[in-house]
View 1: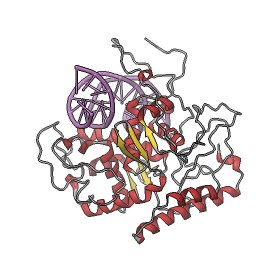
View 2: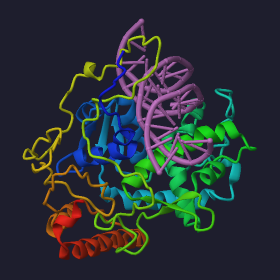
View 3: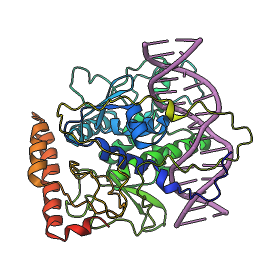
View 4: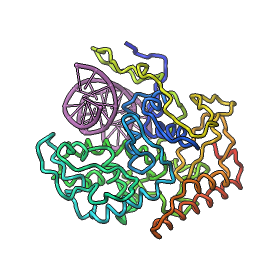
Length: 378
DNA sequence: TGGTCCCGCCATAGT
DNA sequence: ACTATGGCGGGACCA
């Protein structure tokens, strides 16, 4: 038993949000094309279970795409605009808000239970044949489970923002809207827990931001996404949006050390030792020059080896590991990278969206560039 | 205290 | 049967 008495367990350092940032730090680089779950778990020093959480929401926004067992294709930030566009269209088509009870597939909360797959569940639909970047489920019997999935919940949560005029949504409301169950408090409790998870990772990517209702002090989330004024709405490390007792994550890439002690009488030795995962090199890079990312344990003073990281407006929270990494992606770097990936949108609206995204980033970048670079890393 | 949400048990889906 | 996924909710954390 490890009643870790001396070590300092810090919940914040184990948050999904931080894990997400680390995950992004690790894979958001040129040349990365495949993400292996084992590899991610090993390198991030977390158990596999957590990787599933991250990956599921990232997939919901188009950043990742499941390729095969244990493997995901890294789509990157450039895939976000299209993914959001698709979500928005889907949301509108399905009428998220009005559709009330049907949002998450009317979920017959009682496990299993035949439940004829409702025809108009919120996802997939006819969108086949399209080159959608979003994951699609094939609605079938056992897909009852999918209806409750983090992925679907994430998509619906995002749709809520994209398809409604609500600029602020509390998780309570979201849970309610995404499951118009007749006041199933228990169900909602669980759903809210999940929404917390989702909100955390979306927050770390600056898709949303936590705030408080002006009137009620109730916490709620505001959508930042692609919209908003570039100078304020987008995540800008210089202007921390915290102050509002928002959780600020620490910096720890390998949070495998301190565990929350569990007063479990019968430990029943888990076979879950992540050490059993054979670390296979699953980060393939067509580009052989990608430097290895050594656990990133950058102690103050040293310069983390994070130069190739490119972030868009969705920049994950910068780790203030004390060390100041000076390299900021140059506009040229980003431009070339972007153009390399830049999709050829036929759809004008989509193109506009993407252009806006590019413009916003540039605006943000140029503004930041003028300031003292050292400010960037608090 | 009550809002957060980490942790990991264990049911299911996939091979 | 074994492994990969990931739903779920107890209860630790923390403002």
